[in-house]
Amino acid sequence: MKCPECEAEGLPDGASFCMSCGARLQGAAGREPSVTRLHVDQKIERIESGSAVGYEIQQVRGDVHIEGHVVLQLPQDMDLSALAAIPTEVKPGAAAGMAGSQSPERASHIDKKLDQVLDLMRDLDKRGEHTEQVQSGETRVSRVDLLLKKAVIIKSQADQMMLDSVGDNRHQVDYSAGQVDLADLLEGFESAGHEAKLREAYSLLEEALEIDPGNTEVLLHMAELLMELTEDDPTDEQRLLYQVQSLLRNPKDDVERFRLAQATFLLATSHEPAHVDSLRTARDMFQRLGRTDWVRHCDDLIGSLSGGGPQAAQFGHTTGSSFQQPSQQPRFQPQGLWHIQVMDAVGSVITAMFAPDGTFQATQTLGQMGAPLQAYGRWMFNPMHNMLQLQGVISGMQQFMLGIMIHGTQGNGYYGVGTDGIAYVLTPGQP
Image 1 (spheres, rainbow, N blue to C red):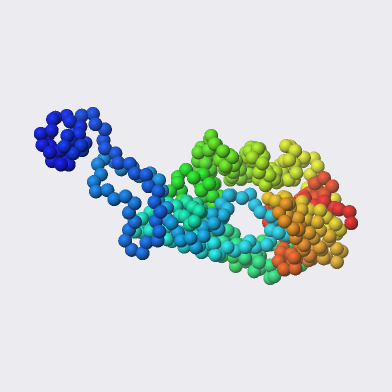
Image 2: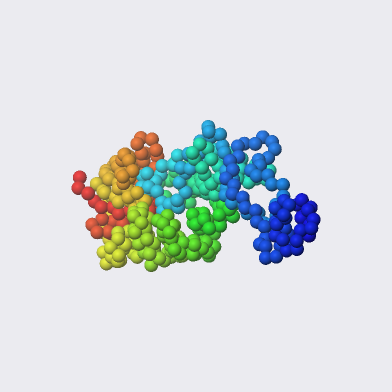
């Protein structure tokens, strides 16, 4: 028998090792196949030419298992903290009312930096140097998170396109009828460009899912996008949401419990009409987690679906007897002082004084989120459609427009739904 390494001859049959060089011999009886295991945690700085080598092995026998991640080390001056701070949680909604008309701050510099990092990683991919994480200083971000954050930004850009269209058209709409057609506000809206943005975001999420097939946060965002992209076919997003529920059948922490509750909520709202029992299940899950923003959102939907207004769900039953349809209710008279509860994610409250001359002054408090917003402007009410229309200026700068259609009475006040899709409870106050 001859050693394949040092070529020593005369080795005994059945020997496992060479007596000359110690090499393991091929064909040894009962010998397990050779395995080479490498653990790699390599940082790659930017390479102008050549390649990065973590381990160089002249000869490998058997299977090779590489464990760990290759980290792209960025210069210290390329701070990643802003990218790491981009929120990716699927949200039930933001502040509505007067505050809902304010355009979100455009973080173009963050978006540009995110593109630079992703482009750098893709350039390295083309050269055979795949990286799964990037690091600058003490901040490390995974490739999956970068793709997810980029998709979230693109989705917000698509939403901003719609807001911009409303802003461009609000001065060209005739308000004399007391009611505004949403189609007039969206005249000239580039629906094809909006859909293209959504599909771009979806493709990034697909790329992230290829890297991490069991990432439930990515799956939730994909399902949410499909609700917009394929409105007439709920089966595709439902398939993803069932997958999330299966993956989180035994959640190990509150993060996984929260995502399971989100999947339950999205499944309930993927049906037409929404499934009330599933909404109640989701509400209970959010309540156990202390997520009052989602609890309030569930209450709003359950109440409106049950016919008792947004407050009904909070008591676990439908108060249909106290809810009157517009034809039965006392006539709504906007003049005077009103306290308006906004069923948004932050629990906003508006105090408004509607003067007989058609002007108003109002203050909106955003829960615990900061200083109140002051606004003034003009109001109109069309009794034929039960539509209260507000148009004015916030803090002397930001223009806004809001319509609230009154649906019925709620206690000693009224229940309505705004053009922003949010529920409102209007209660008369004392001057």
